[in-house]
Image 1 (cartoon, rainbow, N blue to C red):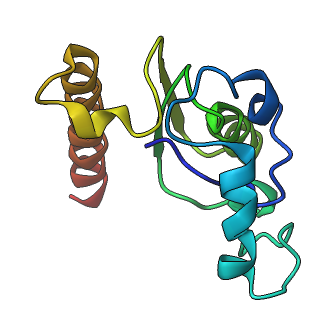
Image 2 (image 1 turned 180 degrees about the vertical axis):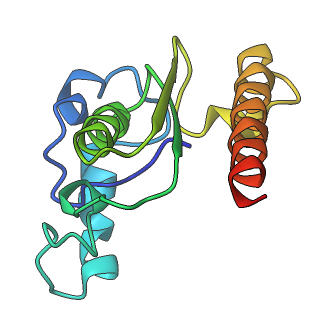
Length: 133
């Protein structure tokens, strides 16, 4: 949900969604990068999963809102997962900010997104059970 996957901050929406994002900014994210990387290269796949080999991952459910600077991270992860033959569901909700799902008590779109994620997860688990039997 609203994944932060590229600590190099190279996603296009870092700039194109700057004015729309009420929670995050490229500057705020940049200020914390070294806290996570401890001086290591932010482009390493273990630090920024967008650059990792995603082969062999289980199905992914990725949700993001159109009003967040991290939107491109979600889109790029979905693309990389598909290229790696990983089953992926990309669910983008218009007009909502970063981790909008946390506001499910007051935001209809959040509750609906959580329902979609739950339904997808249930379908994946049911499919895994059929394979295991």
